[in-house]
Image 1: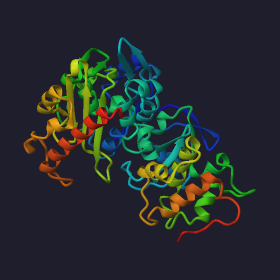
Image 2: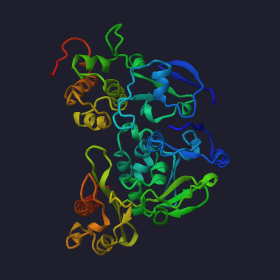
Image 3: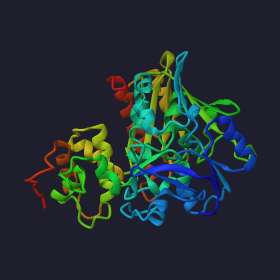
Image 4: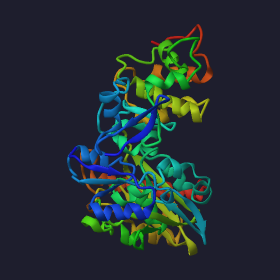
Length: 272
Length: 170
């Protein structure tokens, strides 16, 4: 690693001030950033650890929305009684990320801000139509996620934007189906399906290789008739999926359809 | 640099780490607590697990400077809190079960396995075999095939890992 200094502010205002003073980088759970630093792919000069900021680790509910602090670990989201009650699929999804030690450290905000093309949270947020709250603004997931590791937040020098919370509509008819890479545990393909008000369905896929995306054709078919059979005559173009050492684009496209059907069945069977 | 105060294996200690000092470097290189092993150094193998405030964490992915006020338990201090070992044995109940059930071969992954198991048993005192296998997803062993590790954790959970009659499945 390059040399850098580290600060551990205990409130959001101090964290933002320290970032602006130093031009450094925010450190959440470190499950991605620390390996990146070890490879000398980043030279931040200064790191601002968000770990001690209590206001980033709250869970609250108002007007049909859950607001989850960006600093909540995957373990905390999985174990939150409020999340288990309002968005049970999200609690289960968080409880299946990585392994126990990763869940004890990795955070919701870190996953969302990093937007790894195989991460689970972006698919769930996009399908739910969640809103991402930063220290400056609030924007819908559709605008926030912009492809491979790319988001709407600015990361320019001393004007770095910080994800502070996620606002999620409490839509209970929602499920996430994931086909894991057997070694890494990352999603080869993960699909979140949410049936919202007036039966409008949103479907989002992670693991395509090109960043989280909605599957609009599936959404239209499932909004017409919510059944796995509605997908039978549809197929996804392999052009929308990547081939790599793990598997082919054709197989990823087929998996995305299978995982969508699986999530639909989970919702119909009441497993949500 | 900032002076921080934490406890390691129940002993208070003041440290003044540079920003990029990892917990595993503090433990092994400064404090000579070499029971915690550095395996992959890429957060995948689980050999470097320690408990921070009771939760298993990969010590190769945490900066020491973030740990002001934290309570760290390494394999060297586990017996003191996992105190169902026999009499004045320096081993806790999980370590004793690993010994009796031959839950290790080369031993490289063992401290991480034992730390991980201790967190599982603290939250789920009587796990099923499936729960143990799922829990150990982040701990890689290249020798044992995991069978005796699982058997040891089952035994530790039921208390049959103490006293006579531990059965080796080798």
